Every structure is written in structure tokens, then in C-alpha cells.
Image 1 (cartoon, rainbow, N blue to C red):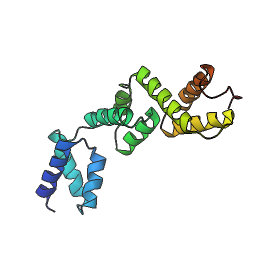
Image 2: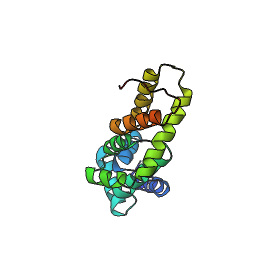
Image 3: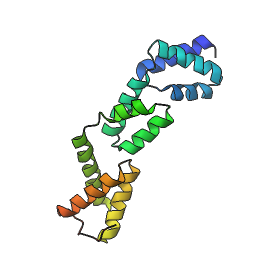
Image 4: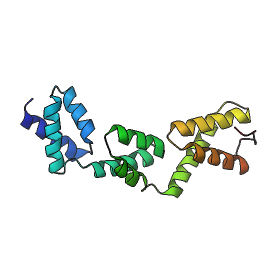
Length: 162
């Protein structure tokens, strides 16, 4: 594949959805394009604003939180893998509404609680915490949310502390 063919193909992809430089370089390498040529192409696409790391980070955070119900930790991790800088990550994650974040966590916990077959309240609490942390929610927030569910009299009986 020539430079121009790859450039056109990548520009077409970037016109449809947001990509990070890391994602596009990986994609081009799988097409058999050298890493050096892929770097040149992504630099050119960034100059022409087909690739914009700030826009990518904002879109990624919005999609993963609103569509996939990921927590901040998981989002942060995947943004780092995609080569996004800490300042952009902090800014993009800062756009998550705290109330929506809390509501999403509670919705996930209640949904998970309905699927648990374990009857021991302590094991239920551990399972809920493990599930929410695996979705990328912070341990302190998860523990507080599970304890609040217990205090509000959800289906779990008050267990001993973890």
C-alpha cells in the first residue's frame, strides 16, 4: 500500500469515527505499513485535524461512560494505552457529571445484586464491590455506595465490614 493510499484510507476512517494516533498506527501496521510511514501519516492527519487527541479523549470518555457504564479508573487506563496525556485525561474525565456517576454506579450495583445467587450478605457485599471495581469504579466510592445500599435496606442484610 502506498503512502497516498494509506493516507486516504485513514482519512476516510477518521472522518467516520475518532481514532488516537496509537490506534491508527497499530491499524496501519496490521495492514503491512511500516511504523515510520504510519507515523508520517498520523502526523499529517493530525495537522489536518482528522486526528485530535483532545477530541478523541472527550468522545472516548463520553462513549465509555454513557454507553458502556465504565468507571473513571478503567477509562483512564484505556486512554493511557491510547497514548493520551495526563492533562487531557484529567480534563476529559472531569466532564463526567458526579451525580450521573453515582447514579450509574447504583444502577450497576442494583442490577448485579439481582443476579447474585449467593445468600450470605458478606459474600454478596464482596461480590458487588469486586464487580463495580472491575468496571473501573474507585474502591472508596464503591464501598460507600454498597454500604449506603445496605443502610437504605436494599436486599442485602447488614453484614460485617469488609
